[in-house]
Image: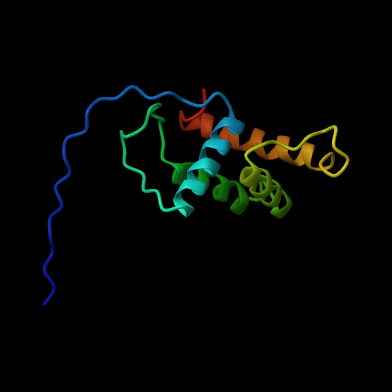
Length: 122
């Protein structure tokens, strides 16, 4: 016989959050959070120096919504993932990265617009 348990959360303090400047800042924040998660970190709301208006998962969900709606494609996801791991954007002056620059900019413009509608980006 299963018993339903009631979970009572502590009251949330009203905290002023800082939205991201653009989609790129939000993406790199998400990427840093993912690296820390893979290293075993756990995120607790309110335990950060700069409170953000979302969780890292919110940024991921928006990227996946853009992908499902076909606003971005596999190529965009590969470029976002590759440069997100490095925590730096593609360099237009490097021959190997030059072709990734327009894909990167397109993906982050789409992401920035989607996050702006949610109040996550200014």
